[in-house]
Length: 188
Image 1 (spheres, one colour):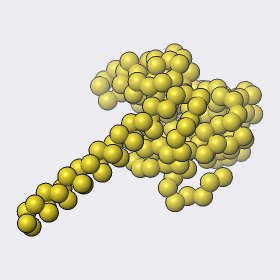
Image 2 (image 1 turned 90 degrees about the horizontal axis):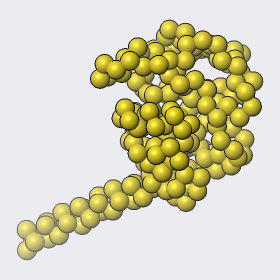
Image 3 (image 1 turned 30 degrees about the horizontal axis):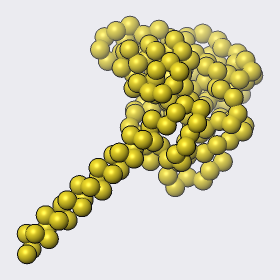
């Protein structure tokens, strides 16, 4: 009897784990522009591994983690190189979740190892010449004055994240925006 009960428990545990895995896949593949799931399971290096709540906001702020599609060329290249999974964005990539460090009107200076946002502080951020496979990487070294609707995304979790250090400021999209809130954090 004890053996039978133990195997039943194992089966229940396996079914629960499979249910979570299927839910994670469904959440990740919700169509771009129509987020129907309130949760996001992050498995990328850009943010800490875990479960995030997807929250709709109408105004972006520095520090928010924006969940968005990358611009067409950047997204296609990111998928081809394996930096981003395939997904439902118009360019064929999955949406990314990255912290916003600068918005419209900010001046961002990207130099070797540092990103300075005028009036907001400085971020240490190495800029690699090559990716982990030895392929050369473009970079956004220089001064960028962010235009209306633009944001500068930078992972504060991983120095290997493919973010605005390499492709510069991007168009943030239009309201409503979808941001990620870490489990246990207060929503904006």
